[in-house]
Image 1: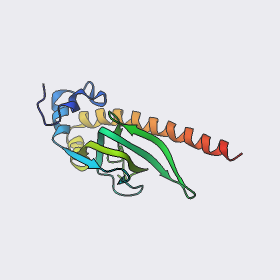
Image 2 (image 1 turned 135 degrees about the horizontal axis):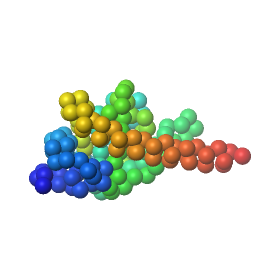
Image 3 (image 1 turned 45 degrees about the horizontal axis):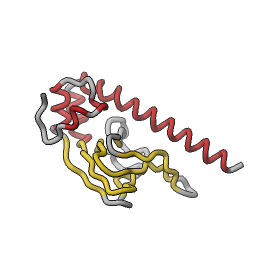
Length: 153
């Protein structure tokens, strides 16, 4: 059993199947993060250096369209935010905004990238998991775009 300040990390579905060494490597990059309602957590195009696990509160994944902001997804406790820290060019692809005060566990993506470079098994395991997140975001974006274009008729 991994003992850490973040014991819930080893119990999170995102990490299911990872060995204790991999979970410990990830936990070594963890810190507490808090964002008040209305605060921006990330902005599209800014350096993406973090992966977040929402413990409490809600965030919106927002696409900054020219006419208005489009909320792609609203995420809450148990969800993860951020995959761009692992994918070059390591820039946020969406804006992330706290829509309800948030407590999150932040993972330092730069440190974790270095660990993935040293341990390709860890890197591949995270890549598979983050690919699922990317597919989910792509699907949510597609549905939002369908809704936007349907309402323009």
